Amino acid sequence: MSEAARDDAVAAAPPAQSVGELLEAIRTGPQGPQVGAFFDFAGTVVDGFRRPGPLRRLTGRRRPHDPAHTLRDSIRAGTTDGEYGQFLQAAQHTLAGCTEEDLTAAGRALFKSELYEQVFPEAWTLVQAHREAGHTVVLISSLTRFQLRPVADELGIEHLLCTEFAVEGGALTGYLDGKPLWRTGKADAARAFAEARGIQLRHSWVYADSLADLPLLELAGRPVAVAPDSRLAVVAAERRWSAPAFRPRRPPTPLDAVRTGAGFAAMLGGALLGVLARSYTRQRRAMADGLLAFATRGVLGTTGVRLRVTGTEHARGPRPAVFLFNHQSQYDIFIVPRVLNGGVTGVGKQELTKNPIFGPLMRFVGVTFIDRTDTDSAKASLAPVVRTLGEGLSIAIAPEGTRSYTPRVAPFKKGAFHIAIQAGVPVIPIVIRNAGEVCRRNAAVARPGVVDVAILPPIDVSGWDPAALDEKVEQVRRQYLHTLLHWPEEKP
Image (tube, rainbow, N blue to C red; front, side, top):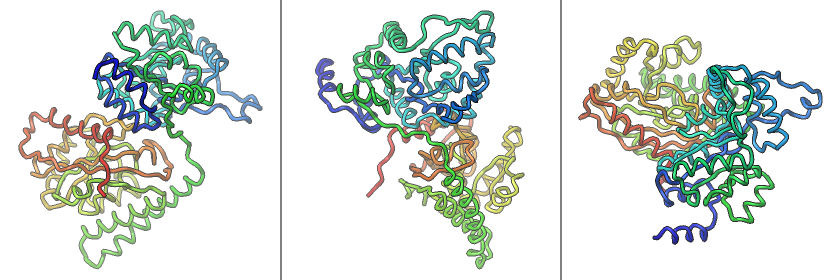
């Protein structure tokens, strides 16, 4: 198909109104770095923080004017001209004299404490699809790089276009460095970037949520109005633009807190009941399996978390095996044993031994604890795991080593692969999707929802060279990324 014919086909096709349709359009459309994908920030990639409520506005109680609050409170969807003017005024006052190093640290602290919870998983998926297509992905915003860079790094976005402040001697002067990226200023910055990089805007994508970004949206051949405000929704409908809805990042409710507390009680009660139900066997492993089965069923059912599993046949065999799972949520410790249905234990961090509840429970089911701060000690402590596999019991391990802030799959550590090679067993990937939406990385309260789990075919590691694992391990990690972007359909 010629380039002109492709353009005509795109124009004639109905606009994509779901993330799935957008993903298909990205995969079947033009590929390569000459295609740009420009993502607005607040309201598009992140949900943004809520405006002060009526009571706070009425009483006049406001946050103190300091850099951290200025960075946080300006991240809002649907910012008006007046609100953006207030942000610039506050930023010029509060950021003046701050060093770039301090503001970079403040931005990263904000991301790790709160902002990561605001990242739309739909945006993460779309960004990864554009990266997979080889597109030039850009995060563009009227805010500062101190707010954007941690999110861009987490999503794998190299290029930033944002409002810049002048710097002298490593500290901000309080004055702008160039035009603010607001309305036409944002569109001008995107156009200049495209010209400098040889990006073909007629084949490019722009994602934005507000009518203030209309000049930016009009630049691209594939404008996408993400959960548009009422005025942009009218324009999108008239011009037949794609307008997908992203799920809002709602805070946990009091009912969620009650469910979470009840789920904790159900876990403890289920653990006791599971041990008692299998006590007649007088076998510790049977009682441990009973504990896991009853406890995980109790906590997931009580908190309203449903599992939708594909590839269950790979969970049943071959056994024993090293099961690897991507780790984003505290609920993963309930999800994994639930889908594997017995005959499995795990590896945990040494700090968990001090937990008065989880420590004893994890010891009972045979978890091996490792000290992650001491590399030599951690390697030595893996020897019992190899023996466990030799005795016929499978192991579940999170190869990332810690929970991620978003669906991003962090680099894998090689310990789990060394274990599998030494024990002569396969590794079996378990890909978990949406667990972070049920219970985020540092959350104390869970929300009801559906978690998707895909168990992939076993991987034979018997021929792998332990001294040359890097590329093999990265190939396994890429399977997770591919699965998250191309989720397998359930078999009828």
